[in-house]
Image (cartoon, rainbow, N blue to C red):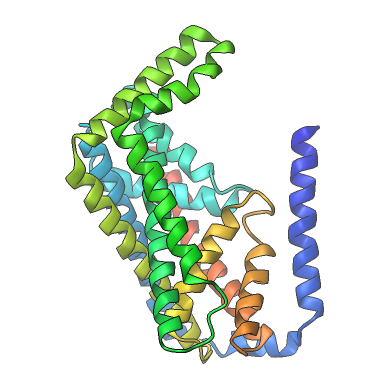
Length: 314
C-alpha cells in the first residue's frame, strides 16, 4: 500500500505539472519549434551522448581497478548501456545502478563492495556536476547577465559534497560507527556488510590517483552533456548561451533525482520554464528543449535493450 501511494503521488505530480505547463503555452508554437530541429544536428547530439556513456564506463573501470576488481572496458560499456535503458524506462533513476551492481558483484566478491564502487561513482559525479554549475553561474554573473541561481549556494553545495566524500574515504570507521544501529535488524549480517564497506573505502584511500581520474572524467561527462543540449538548442534556433545551459542542465539533473515524480517528468520541465522565463525566453522553447533532450536520451537508451537481448543469447 505504501508503494502504491508513493507511485500514485509521483504520477499525479508528473501528470499534473505537465498538464499545467502545456495548458499555459502555445502548443502550436511548441510543435513548430520541435519540427524545425535539424536532423544533422540531432545526429551530432546522439554521437555526443555515446561519448558520455563511453567516458562514464571508463570512470567506473578506474574505480573497479582501484579495488583490484577485474572487468574489461567492453564489458562495463555493455553493462552501462543496459543500465541506461533501465534508468530511462523504469519509473526510477536507480534501476540502472542495480544492473551495474549485479554485473560486477561476482568479480568484486560481494554486492556491498560492488555497491560501494557504484555509489562512489555517483557521488563523485554529483560533485563534478555541482562544480560545473557553480563555475558557469559565476562566469554568467561576472559577465553581468541575469543568473537565477546564486553561485555562492552552488559552491557551498559542491564543498559540502566534497567534504562528505573525503570524510568517508579517509575516515571510513566513522561511517561504520554511524551505521552500527542497523545491527538491531540482523547483527551478524549487518556487521559483515559494514566491515566490507569500511574495507572498500580504505582501499580507495590508497588509490588517490584513481579518484582524481574519476573526478576529471566526471567533469568531462558534464561538459559533453552540456554540449549535447547546446547542439539541441542550436538545432532548434533557441538563443540560449553555453554558460547558461551549463547552469541549467546540471541543476535539472539534480532536480530529477528527487523522489517527487516519475523520472523527473514535469519537475524537469518546470525548472526549464522557470529558468528560461528569468532569461526572457519563451516557455515553448524551454519545454521543447527539455522534451527533445529527454526524447533523444530515451531513444539512445533503447540500444541498451538490444545489448541486453544479445547478452541473454550468449
